[in-house]
Length: 227
Image (cartoon, rainbow, N blue to C red; front, side):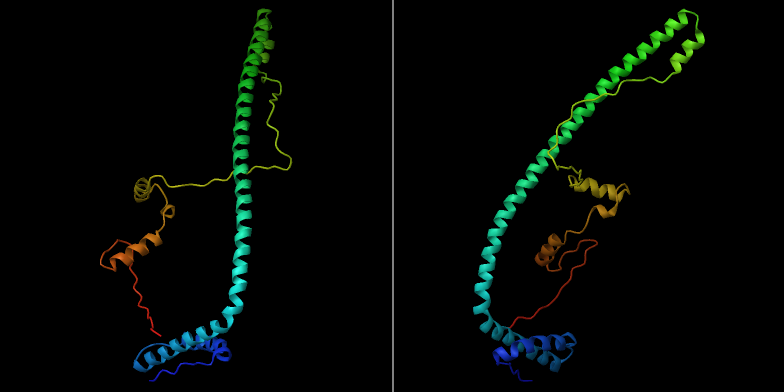
């Protein structure tokens, strides 16, 4: 079959592209005739693409260039501001949490001292009652709940409107240990995944001559054309 390339530029490029896409979607290359027909569609698509860009690029390219410059300016400012917001937020969040832990630790320390003092006072009171022969009163004094004063420790002052959220993430530190844990049933299989980027590079380098258990090498033949 002779290849007849569509050459009418502006009028046919869009029609050709959209029409051929639907046609090619249902095309199966199963013999010489369908192979030749597929190459007719291939050539027409290339011609349609070239025709479209011939008249559209002079309009599209300056707009695209201006858009890229605008995006670059916006990205420069937005990235800087976003970094500042995240960095200061992270630093402030870390400081607040550390200070809150200090406050909590100090409160626990003071409460422990207050509780010990209250328990000692309670014991002395019970002993005094016992010394006076008031056994029942002494027993009641010892069984009464220990009351300590409310402990207030000064906390760091948060900026107005600031709120803090604890977010958790994880990172791998020992892949072999994780793999062994999965094999022993001590960690879920979902903790790891296939590194498709690495496997793709490996497949391209080995061209199917090597085998990795659990991995299937896929091969697809594509066609290039000289115009």
